[in-house]
Amino acid sequence: MPVDNATDEYGTDEAYKIEIAFDWLQENEPEAAWAFNEFEEYKKEHQKAFTPGINQLIWETADAIAASFSGKNKSELIMLSKLKILLIN
Image (tube, rainbow, N blue to C red; front, side, top):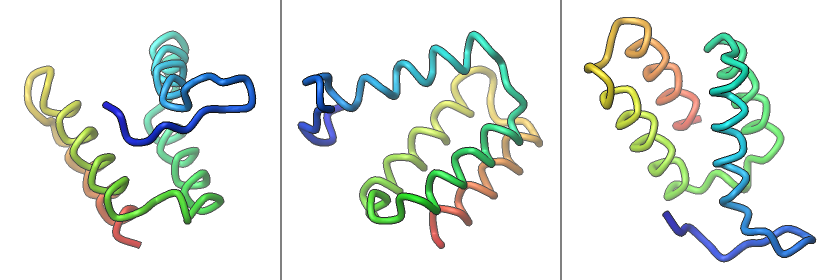
């Protein structure tokens, strides 16, 4: 989904990095708590990148992913709640 036309110093679409990250996560299967903490640290270090529109897009994407397989389980609901709080702050 196009958000902007940003590219890195090599001319690669910045959005492609999301696909790379998902591939890495799928291959390495880190613990959810670790991944959430990494995202939380990234957000703290890059506050300006998290506009209300980006936060909404992150929320909608996470919510859709959680619901896509077989509905949201208890651990997903807890993680979604933590994400919602993080995105608000």
